[in-house]
Image: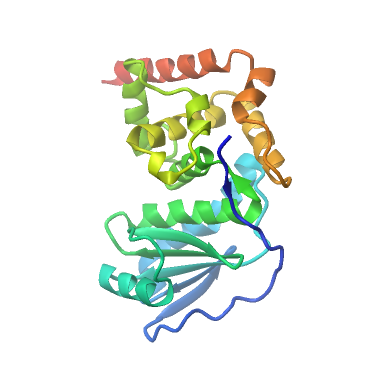
Length: 262
């Protein structure tokens, strides 16, 4: 099974100084996050509230423990400032609209105020929380959970942007199996279909039944142990023997329900 590895240093302490930036206008501690912005964070109050709740949601839904170290979040008012900052302090970082980086055990999230700003920050902060709590995270699950929690509370299943695409794929028999997702080793292997399928499997595990949610939470608990666990597909085959059929039934029912609303 493909795993993305990230070392977790269990050291708590006060927020570390940010790399120099003359225009930091606001700084707040928001739950496990130290947020620094070059604009007033009062302009992003909704996002601030969501970040405060994000760790609580991961803990309540899946038992993800809180991080033992602050996660630093850097927010920029425009793309140019964001790109210049990364080029100066993290020159090897990939060119993306938002980033989660972990260097020397320190998790950092960077984003600029694009039209997708709030989604980007929630997505990358989910990655940061997962990698702060778990020594390893399978690629597909890392992305599937980030896709799920990038949406605000109340918009993570039927009101999620991903829902209609998953329903359409279910109607045409195009939702992928879990095994091929677990084989993905590199982010370049995750195309639109793989992101869709990762989100669909996470949604199924969270919402199909208390039993499927328990299996996902148990698998994540297994990930807290050092070393790769067995695959989630193997775990499901043992505890939910017809999980593939349940997955298909779940999404066919969702498709039929949506069709009745159209």
